[in-house]
Image (cartoon, rainbow, N blue to C red):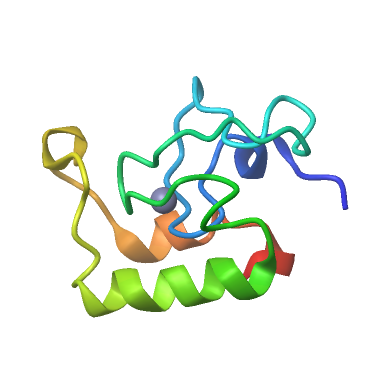
Length: 91
Ligand SMILES: [Zn+2]
């Protein structure tokens, strides 16, 4: 599956987007082991498969979608539009 540019720079669990963030490398296949600023998952461990990503997303929803780095949370943050960044096969 080829990702679009937004999906390539977005967390597979919460959709957090940062143009300098490559959770799965610039090819979408190479795990960075980075921690997401928003939902706090670690790539590979928590998002290697769609089922895993869905589980982690459910846990994050249960935590009221809290940010792991609250200082990075934009004032106008919108969950619904962020979720649109997730590649469809991981939704
Ligand atoms: Zn995330």
